[in-house]
Image (cartoon, rainbow, N blue to C red):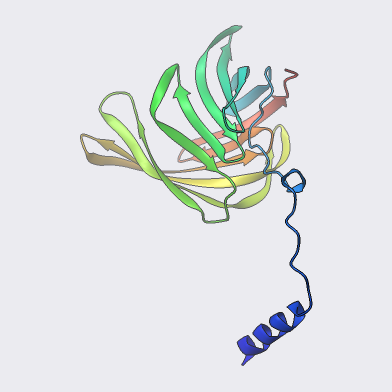
Length: 203
């Protein structure tokens, strides 16, 4: 009965109303980017008590809306390859790690995504091992780290490490990504990394 009442109310409310005009694309709300796409951006993380610094040394546009951001590790004034990541309204995808192109690009975040949206992945590791698993967006929340408080999307990773086709380890890793910043926090068994400082680039 209640369902019938709701249906009747909905149909009655629509009588006499003209179809709404489509919203122009330029007026549609834009999906935020969950990474900085400014050259020169610097991130400093406390990684299990040690400081790790990274810099966006190059930013190039994608053929489709988005950018490829080259990130390098900065240590004692020297820079070394860390990763290349595709940043777009569709999310974040790692296409190169430590100077080696990813045979299977790793999607860190899918956007737009409703809570409990899930995707699977496989990532080859050095030697005879690889990681496989699934990631799930579990919500958005305020995250407090040394760099400040960020409204961030939380992603839970269920990871299985495989050696010679046999599972040898299972892990759960949780990451948080903030708009226009990127990763602000990551936790796992015996592991914690937090954003200590964030300096946007000007390029």
